[in-house]
Length: 118
Image (cartoon, rainbow, N blue to C red; front, side, top):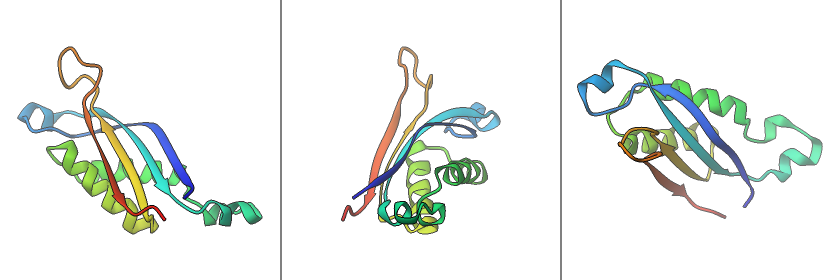
């Protein structure tokens, strides 16, 4: 299976369990790999037959800001579900980092994989 990917997507959103986190925006960094047959787009050089990573990047940021949650685990599941249903993506791998969330670490986060690789 071919993959379309987005690496290092930095978004500002409200995320966190603690009350002070609910009152601020924090940076999350997302890496998304999406299974897709890129040959269909390449055949006639057609954007509408592939996954538009610019459109998806904007959609992910909008989704995160319109659906605030406490846990990045919850956000990861919801983004995965949103992307798979909206864009008919059969498989994806999504990592969400929350830089600076834990003292003495570069980043913490979660990585999930959903769907089937064909």
